[in-house]
Length: 361
Image: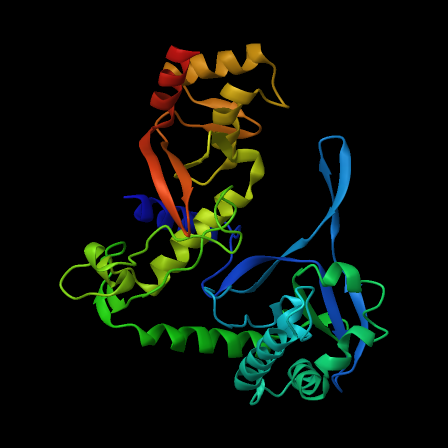
């Protein structure tokens, strides 16, 4: 039920153009490595933006739609077109040059595999960058000096080639999407428990991030790591076969919800998120406003809206007509080592949820 609801939410967001298509994901990027067609690093561009947090204005990474993050464990595995400095520059602030060298080699191999046959200036520039870059001299490069201290904290970087983001290049995008689609054929063919369709299923699902107390690299919502949890000889997530699209969709939708700090609430160690079937954020706003107040409406206005919705009447909230019969979901997740525990999952109409809230407030 949870995975089906999240997959449907992803599809609704996708139709609205709010969320990334399959194979792509929102990634927080702090700097762009500005190279030319010869692969030479000309400058390092900070792409952070200002954000209000309380009374302060802070600089935060920019979210970009880039090739979807790979699921990392303790091994060396590179993302495409973006990564931390260990992978793209061969240096980091952890004092482990041997591992940084392995990370850089893994990133180089991936980019050579995907871009060797791509005939575009951006692809040639990235290939030549990896061919010519010397990790041992990276910390001395003049183009890195101004941002080096921040970069060594492990922030994410991406490529600008001739002042155009590499991920915007149509030929590079096609190369990635072809690779991503072919990669999905590795899993055995089974019936997906989410969509009911037969096709390759994912052994390991993408990580879920932004749950306070969970691993910063992400945690798993669906995971089988011991024989006692498995059946009929199935390994890993083949015990709950989920197709490639569904695995991408539900994790992308969940990460989208958890990244929206305005609509994530904590009860002890439990992160509480909510969403409407229509994917209109006004439902989340009013639901949260019942507990936390609203920046748009005073308590009297909110009370009037809640009463009307409880009586089965549609209400206009921030230019969105709220339907009391709209299906609404509330999910509670708590950290559990490298996994997430589902504390509760509730489904009802929006009006019924408000009735219950009204009873206890």
